[in-house]
Image (cartoon, rainbow, N blue to C red; front, side, top):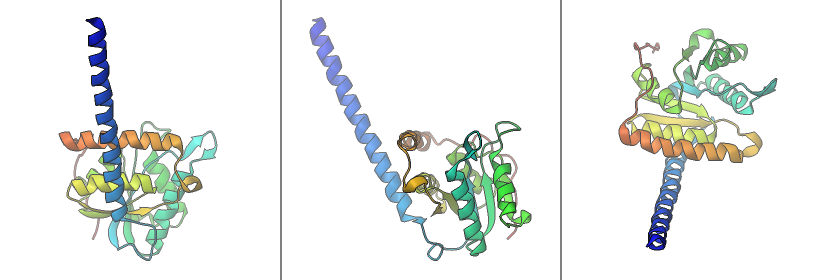
Length: 216
């Protein structure tokens, strides 16, 4: 009797694992397909938008070692602005504590690269990609905007925005060695599974607050 129960339990587990694996494959394919459709590699091809959102990440991956994902996002934002493909740059990220502040770090580096201070808007509540994308509309009033990050990240951001009815496009910043690492791939797969759950239950940003007007 115990043996029969163990066999049935194993079959159920195997079925659940198969179903979950199929779901993970499906959501990844869906996100990538939708993201690629609205992502651009060329400055000459990407349409003009009033605002771009630079998705935050840590400037350093270890003591004194620069995170290339961060560097490439800053470079991409500068390129779009100086090519007149965007008018304002929203730097959206986490500010866990005084010594870790992604928006301020991006703001400082953009100013150093020649972007006028009055053309940079700081979003201190971009704790997750969903927060950054949804807040761009609900707080900063932008229904159509450009997201700047690496391709795999852009695909997810575009998917979130489009599912929320926003006209989101993306500009692909450079990637490390031309492709993400295994660690980044695994983390991205998990983020896309969470994305599906967020869409299912209608997750909203952690914080909204008062609307902030970006000049026309």
